[in-house]
Image (cartoon, rainbow, N blue to C red; front, side, top):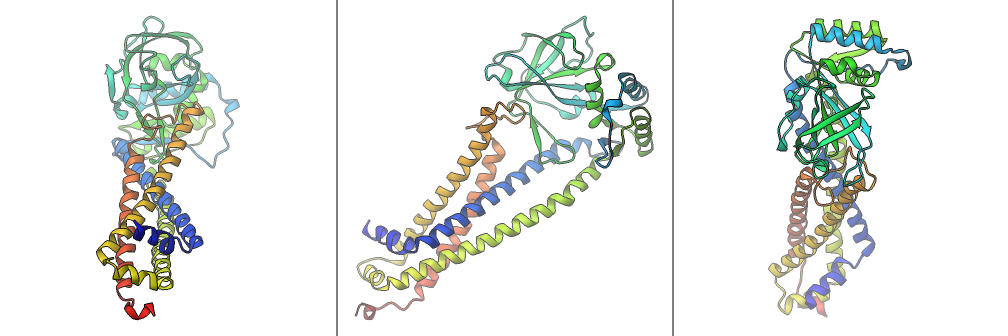
Length: 406
């Protein structure tokens, strides 16, 4: 115990300003590594999810960012013409997210209504924890509309329960019947940024058929076009849709296949990753050099005390164990801080009642967060191993004898 106290107080923490600087750099390196690892994991998940769109004949719409749309001039008759044209000539996937409604629930979260047609539902391949999948062959205003609810609504609205609300899309009172419950943390990745996700724990998925689209309001019509996906189509036919939308709505749309969307994303994402990885690598090199230099300088300044410890039984194997214990505790504290920050960020969505990003887990921490923390732990292990082994090698080269005590 005296030996451990000696090394902590007289060697490791002797130059506390340098130690503090190293801890700050280590935290930055850990947090950058964690952020990068989590982003890569999220991107990989997004690529897997969207891969169903990455095939010939599939084109994803998006509003041209260089256009100047005037939504005030768009009329419901014009949007109905566009959807009539699509229904008669194309197979398309439609999903419109983000229609907020006030609905009582255990967590007092805003509930998001998401509208999805059958083709989009097939593409998303949602997994259920309870109940059955959606049925799109209902009669509007004659039958209860079957819906799926997110995991956060399952206790308040279990399978088989009825929900009566004013539908934001049609502005009519509708009766919904809960058909199934989505698995916890079900999500949808962005077509243009696969690392970005929207979570559905507090969402209701309402099936959309042609009759529903005809009776829906302008908001749903316009919102549905923003990410509409043409299936089994051609570039020429996609351009025809583009011209039809421009002619009727005055909106300038682009239609790209998913590979083009991926390429656009990768052009800026990969460059950002390179910059972050370069900064992290430089920080790690500085940390290794600073830790070794600080330890060696402290040992040289305390060479007499260090020599006495060697003479009374301290071996290099025990010295190595002390070093590993010290850096193991240091890295564990830094990793714990990274976890706490992550948990605060995740739990903050619950406190702010942000139903779009609220997730289930320990304080909301989800699987990709844990995977990223494991990657950071592995990096810390490599850094700790490098620091300890290089330091021990350097120490063995310090000339130590009884003469230093005189």
